[in-house]
Length: 421
Image 1: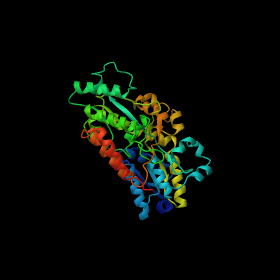
Image 2: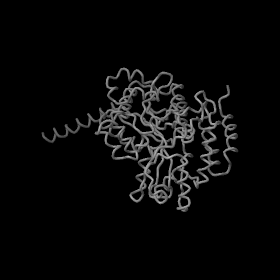
Image 3: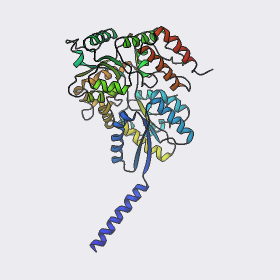
């Protein structure tokens, strides 16, 4: 009898498990930047599924960056293969998708959810994810360009350097001295090639008080700010920057072969961790060259693309968790992204003590007042415009052409790709 009851118990458990599995909702979550964003999306999804066993999250990472993710989603929309949710969705791409009806508006979900205010996202933060009056995503992260200093090298030429709020003149002077003192190293590297929508070039122009594109979609880099930015990139080449892929540069920095490295604060964790104990790394803010200078905001949000009511309800649960204080803590500690959740920043259980223990994360927090969502590239040719600008920047950094030669060509080539009215 006992054996029979035991068998019946096992059968009962299996039946319950099968029933639970049958009622489980599966959500496909697509994202970009697989080598970076998987570091936090995987543990966030796993933790969410532990707390919500009736929802399964399947992560998909086929896009290398924002333009690739946008093109993938546009193709998926045509073929009927859209995922249920999207993470790593750049703020500049949200209008394109929202105008096509591909992003599920979240206004009613927010208004009807009594728990929303306890998530920790300030109403003002939703401005980054609002398109034509509708919230189409929840902000998940913010990033900005910062400077990474290999102090193990720099101390050789600036033994007393403490204040790292440096101007470009200061930085280039240090780079010149590094070139003389350590000819087997690269004095400076400015990560520009693998940018989504020429993000670092946007930061340069914004820091000079300009724009790559104006708010009404006209070329903005044909300006003093644009010329100053190109002149500075020429100086990077003159001071000894070698043009290489971002991955090669990260490896070179980790091995102590680069003195000053400009990249996103979202690379903080990997850049400093890979450097190991033999290198002393400090960070500083991106130089501001104009009194009204700004910085291009990177990062992105998480959105719902499903139109199925049951999946929307399940996805909304995930969006709240993924933007909540626990998930935000995972994101910051895995990458160095700047958090958008006020609860996470405020309380010791989350990130309250993190910035005291990790001073290299502070420059990005201090840059927040300068952050601006960069103006979108107009029309359907955003990715092509990105490539055209990038190739012209490369010719300046590699000293193949001067800024004076490049600027009119860049204007002409970009104009050909703008919408015809």
